[in-house]
Image 1 (spheres, helix red, strand yellow):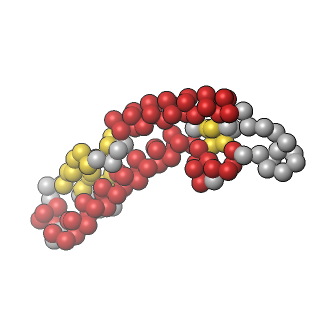
Image 2 (cartoon, helix red, strand yellow; image 1 turned 180 degrees about the vertical axis):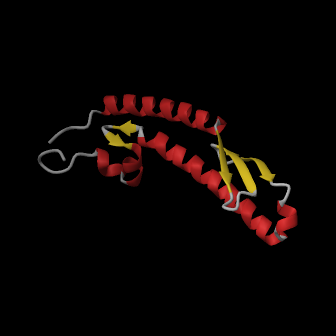
Amino acid sequence: MRRVDIAQLVTEVTALLETATSETGQLAREEFVGTAADGMVTATVSGAKELLDVSVAARAPRTVDNITLGEAVVEAVRAAEALADERRAEIMSGLRLGGVDVDTFLADPMSLVPHGRDGR
């Protein structure tokens, strides 16, 4: 049965944390812009999902009611947040620990532990 090299695992975890900290810090400084389907509202969020800006087309207040305009704002913000989520997933997919991608490890921490006679 294959043994888990704890020292190697600690080294990998340390490197992973440094990389993750750097990448998420960079992500937080990125901006993502989403637009409502009608194009009348755009929203900008940071990678940390902080709302940075909402822009409403000048014609919007004259052409749609307040409820519809509010729904368009929500739609634009959610679209921007979805782009931030996609970028975060892209960053996470590149992180590996013990030969296992981080998403798999977070879903199943036992994925690092060898099982059975052949170590799998």
